[in-house]
Length: 193
Image 1: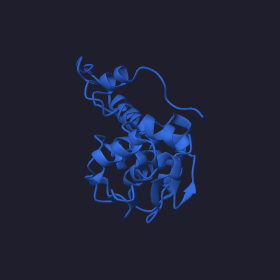
Image 2: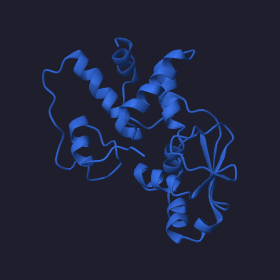
Image 3: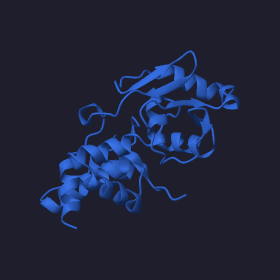
């Protein structure tokens, strides 16, 4: 399985945003982008969006193509698709402390969707799907403690701390997604190609 590797903090400093959710990611400052062209700004926004969700270029391109074929705003649809990936939902619910850890949990088979094991991080979670730990993983206190300690503030997800289960209530609206990206620039970047 291909996934972005390498120095995460360097990427965060170059993009100017803490895309990995680590408190020390921008401690050494942000790279200065002086005299950047319009194309450079569009490229920067695209790289930010890819980094937020840990997607490589080929797979990201497929999401963009799907967004252009959809009805409505392609930028909103693109962010909505990426936000509903299984690894991201597992991260947002608090099973994993980082997106990379959530992805590893999915790949190692710790996560059930509607009581069926799913080991693909790119699995598209549908409205009403229930995400939970498999029974043998419930015994691991690290997973349980992390899930119980993280508060959920996203209105499109619900979290039941008694059963250690999360549910996608509805598709997310762009304004609710906690990322700092100008998705219209991403759409402009790909509309030229």
